[in-house]
Image 1 (spheres, rainbow, N blue to C red):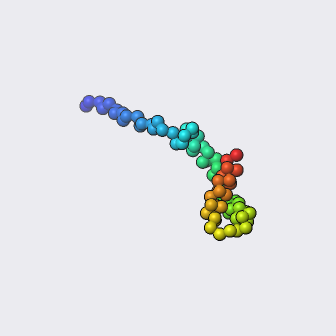
Image 2: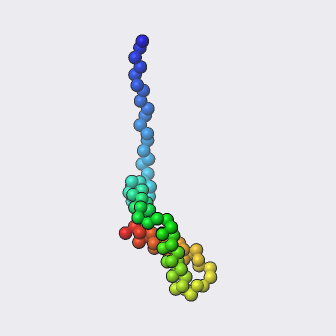
Image 3: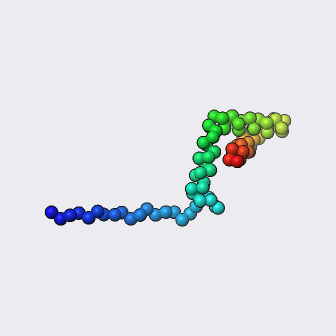
Amino acid sequence: MPQRTPTTSPAPRRSTRSASPGRSPKRANRVIERSTAFVDPDTRHDMIAKAAYYRAAGRGFAPGNDLEDWLIAEQEIDARLLT
């Protein structure tokens, strides 16, 4: 009976593009893992809500800026969590 030779499939291609400018994909993944490893999502949400509240209070609770307050608070909290 003839002996079979194992067949090899071609190696998977790797993308030459990075996940974001200036960062390798591994580095980008590590940052995401680090930010979620220490603070659970509910705590992060509460921190963002408080920061957004204080931003709104600082402007006298003028209507129409709630989304902007939230997004800026989210950036600030995420920046603090990553340091």
